[in-house]
Length: 54
Image (tube, rainbow, N blue to C red):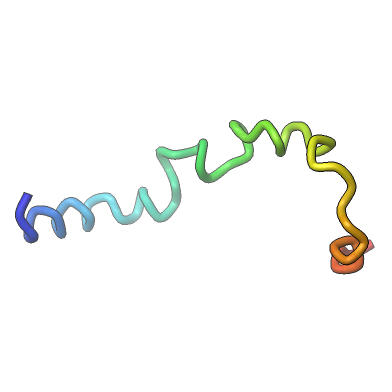
């Protein structure tokens, strides 16, 4: 593909790409096994706990 064709293709897909419309595996926790099993991560270190609101 030459440069004008590449630019044209990127322009056509920019909006969908910016929203992750066709990539839920990248933009959601639906396919994230760790998000579905947070106990795998263990307890947050004390320094992190202090950053989290109670």
